[in-house]
Amino acid sequence: MKTEGTFPLNDGRSIPAVGFGTWPLTGAGATRTVGAAMQAGYRLIDTAARYENETEVGAAVRASGLPRGALFVTTKLRGSEHGYRSTLRALDESLERLSLDAVDLYLIHWPLPRLKLFVESWKAMIELRERGKALSIGVSNFEPEHIDALIDATGVVPAVNQVELHPEFSQPVLRAYHSRKGVVTEAWRPLGKGSSLGDPVVAAIARKHGRSPAQVILRWEHELGVVAIPKTESIERMRENLSIFDFKLDEEDRTRIASLDRGARQGGDPRSHEEL
View 1 (cartoon, rainbow, N blue to C red):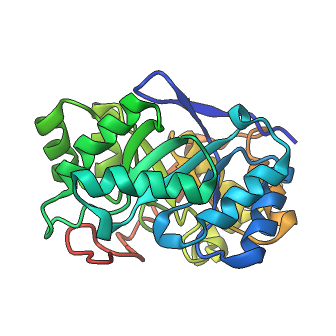
View 2 (cartoon, rainbow, N blue to C red; view 1 turned 45 degrees about the horizontal axis):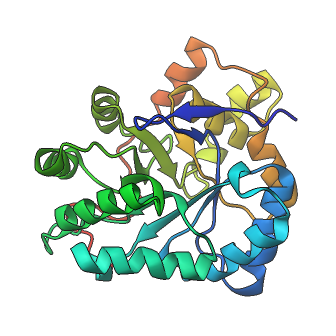
């Protein structure tokens, strides 16, 4: 199984092309599942303060026996911690739960524009990067106007924007904006809620390549330059989701998958989402 593959970030670092999402894993099961994912070959592990599983993820990282430099750990600032001082404090608390000196990527989880504090949080994240507590910084669920506000205020472009992305909601306008700005697109819910897996178009392409529907979708996202972070508790599917680097889609495949976009957002809208 070939598991290599990274994308360059705008700060000179790189990010694994496929990672492991940890929401909504909790408790001892989270530690076991994340540990199994690392054994299967995952090196990007994605968590968040809001997931309330950072302690369990940190335990899995320690138990893995892998060198810290071999792993890329992401966590996120929850909405209730927006603001300059609270962002500084929030990462310290996340690092304590993770038992890490630094995270590889720290993201603002949602912009929460009603609070009007995400720019202040971004200024704090720049300081955290300068202190070496967050090696790269970025955002999650941000629209272009939110990212523009960050850049206008600080001149610092996020390395990553983690957003909902799957065949039924492929975000072409946002991806084009990211490309212009040098922001890596990262997909949460990269397989949708499973609806795309049963689509006849995806099934036909999977048969053509002798692959699973999930592998076809993840390969399509990889060829778009998108980092995907699928979550599964099945070890077989963990391995399957990583095995996307030894085949390629052709132009017809990519066009057919792109045609599945219905603008069908399944999660929250960043312009109105209020979860703290």
